[in-house]
Image (cartoon, rainbow, N blue to C red):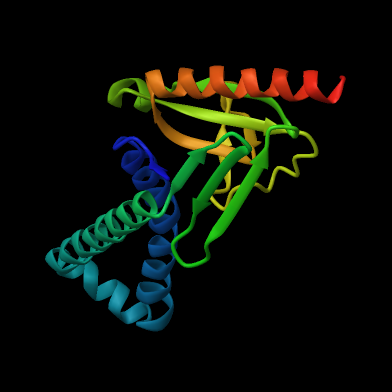
Amino acid sequence: MSQLHQGAKWVFRLNAYSRFGFIFLILFYVLIFRIVGRNFYSSIFQNSLELVILIIGLLCLIILTAEIYARMSYNRFLYEITNDGIKIEQGIIWKKYSSIPYERVQNVDIQRGIIARMFGFSTVQIETAGQSGAGSHYGFRFGRRGNRQQKSEGYLPAIEMGGAEQIRTFVMKKIKQTHKDSGM
């Protein structure tokens, strides 16, 4: 099985910043304003150094958690393009194994956002017939004009640019061959 482009770590890292940053901000609020109480809130602004240290500590915790998440996600996201179909294995705690036969593939899209262009990779979206839209535990992605769209079942977040073109060409040939063999 093949691993994603090294730039995938940035995709996973940015995803983690948005996820864990929000969670830690809520925990920060609960800790400061609810558990510790209002007296601590008024005294913390008297000594702003403690507040700065607390915020820096929170940011370090977010960065550390995001880095661990990015590395683990990258190491546990594997894919394979075979003669029968596309196999994808992903997940840190809950593993997800997808096998997409070429008979179900309808289209292969290649996308290159700003981060992808900076790091030299492409995102490959393999759209399937009967796709439920819940094909990835990574949630939503932002499409054109900020529209929230669900990811395709065959989502490969970071493939080398030349490799993405090769995957699209190979899969499209397999689709045509499969439809030709089945008499469509």
